Image: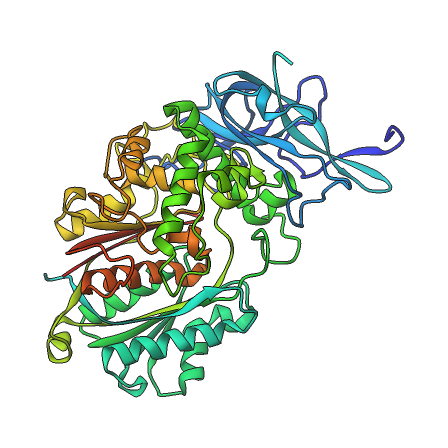
Length: 146
Length: 395
C-alpha cells in the first residue's frame, strides 16, 4: 500500500529506526545510573545526584504490561486520525532494568480483551500516520505471544 | 491556629455549557461571594485569579481581567496557574498575603469556558511540549490516562466495572439537589454500564465532562473575620506539593515515569503526599474528616482518592463504597456536591468550587445534600505537570 513512500521517524531522536532491533533512546546519568525517557540532556533529575554527564542509551526492548486502555473515539488534533477511525489500545509497559513505565500505542489488531497486566510486551516500529510522500513511523508495543 | 485564614464569603456561577465568556461566570461568582461576605468590591485590597489557557490573553491574566470587569479599584492583583490545581494556587497566594500581614482580606476567583469534547493542547506545533506531543504521538487523551488507572485497580485489587458505576450512581444522587451542578439526573447502574465505552474500562458516564463555570471566595484574617461574621469557617491547611523523585506512577502528560534505578522510591507516593501535606499543616488526620470533595475525573479515580487521602488502606476502597460509608448519611460522605461527575470540569474554578462546597456544608447551608454536623472537610485534586492540591476547611 505504502511501499513507495519514504519511512521517516514521526519524531527525531526518540527511537532507533531499525526494524530488526527498534529501541527507545533515552539517556542515563553516568553518576547515579538513573534513566530518562524522553532524553534528559541538561542534568540528572535525581535531586540527590549532582551528575551532569548524561549518555544516550537504548532502552530495553521488552517489558511487562503495567496497565492498558484504548481509544474508542478519535483523539483530537494534533493527533492525525485515520478515516474511518479504528479503535486502538494504549499500553503502559514496565521496563525491569530501567525501573520505569513507558507508554505506547499497541499495534493494530490487538484488542484490550487480549491484554492482561504482567504479560510480556515487545517494542516494534509501526506507522503513526501517512501523507502523500511519507510514512511517519512511531514505536508501538506488541504482546510477545502474539 | 497561627496559619489559618477565614472563609468569609463563597459564590458560584452554575456549571453548564452556557456558551458565554468566562469573565461573566467569574464576575457572577465574585459578586455572590462579596455579598455573602457582606463586603463591597472596593473594600478588597487584593484579588487573585486562577488562569485559564482556553480563553486567550484575558484568561492568562485572569486576576486583572476580573478586576477590570468588576471596575478598576487599584487593588493589588495576581494570577496563578497550576492546571487543574490553579484554583488552589490562587487560594494559597491569597492565604500567604493575608498570613504575611500584607492584606486583611482578599478575593479569589476562577472561571472557565470550555470547548466541547476532549481537552486538547493549546494550538500550534510544539515538538518540545509534552502536552502537545502526547496527543500527536500517542493520541493520549486525558481519558487514556484515567483508563490506565482504572484498569490498574481492576488488575491489582479486583475492582469491577460495577464498582466504578456505583460511584457515578452515588455522585449523581448527591448532585441531584445541588443548584450549581450541571447534571442533575440520577443514573442507575444500568444507565452507566450501557453508556458508550470511551477508554476501556471507562464509559462516557464515568468520565467527567468539560464545563463552563465560575467560583469565588472571600478570604480574610481571623481578626478581620471576627468583625464580620458570627460563624467563621477557616482554612486550616493548603497543600500544593510537588512529587518527590522518583515518581513511579505514570502522570499526565508524560510518556514515561521517573526511573527508580538511581534512588529508591519515596515512602509516600505523590498522590498520598498531597493530602498528607494538608493533614500535617492542620494537625489533623483522616479520622477527623466528616466529608471530602475529591477530584473524580473518572468514577474509578474517586476510589483511588479514598486510599490516597487515608480513608482506607490500598485495595479497600471498593468495600468502603459498597458499605455506603462515602454516601450521604454514611461515615464520611465523599463528593456530597455531586463531584466532577455532576459538574464537569471548569479547570481554574474547580478547586475553588470544592472549597465553596465545604464552606456551605460546614455552615449547614447545603440544602438537599447536607452532611449533618460536619465540622472538618478536605478537598483533594491534582494538576498535571506535578501540582498537588489539597485544602482542609473546618469550623
